[in-house]
Amino acid sequence: MSSTTLDPVPSSRGAHSGAKATLAGDGTSTGPGPGYFRVLNSEFIKFRTLLSTLILLGSTALVMVGFGALSAWGTGQFAEAATQDPEAAAAFAAQGGELAVSVPTSGIVFAQLILGSLGVLLMSSEFTTGMARSTFAAVPRRTPAFIAKLLVVTVTAFVVTTVSVYLAGLVALPILDNYNLKLDLASSQSVKLLLVSSLYVAAVAAIGMALGALIRNSAGGIMSLVGLFFVAPIAFQLIPGDFFVEARKYLPGNTVEPMTAAQHAADTLEAWQAALVLGAWVLVPVVLAGVLLKRRDV
Image (cartoon, rainbow, N blue to C red; front, side):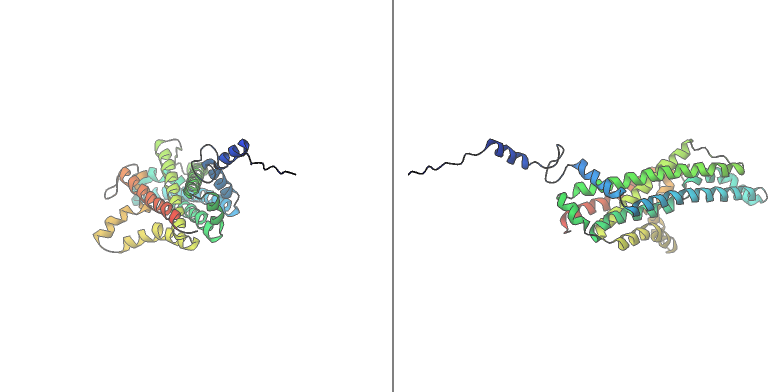
């Protein structure tokens, strides 16, 4: 009885299957991990399914609208006082119109704190909860996940701020009308305030997310954000010396006023200079966070 040895013949189907197995993601993928649009979608799903995120976004809108109404009432009270006080009348004549047009954006200082903190939490929570292990296991290059999260945070901050400012303006309109003060939400200055303020808050959210990636701790990131935008300007104002007076202009929190002012004020940055300074404050920590994110362990 003879035995026959059969040599295995490689299957062309198997060969093609193996070739396909080396491709990852969709047509837009150039390396390991899913395609960028899938990463972006997953980051958006994580963003919108967190209850804390929705609470912070709702709080931003509520605070913006509330301070818009409060600012409209305060401006009206100031207008009434101007009719009986010559000094107040002169002050109102000089800046009353500017006060009225800036009413919808009176809550920006609180919006930047809330949405900046949201940016910190969205990145730092990846490390405190251990979610970063799953995220970077699915996206080994890490940079697409970081850029996707940054895009979600900044676009959301811009949209929420824009809608909140507009709603604050709508709420302020009837209050200002009671004091015979006019606010045109379609004027060039109102549109400029709305867009620049929204871009500014989006920039603050990007800085917050970069701090969350660098520090990897929620409390530390938020405290750093508060120190940069709230403590540093006060400290620079209290410390004597020409250096601190000049350096205060280049703090990120002091760039929004030159960009939204109807006329350039003396001893302040030009609008384009303030925009470049704010852009540098965003670019440097974001790039540094992206580089360190690839080099550091999870």
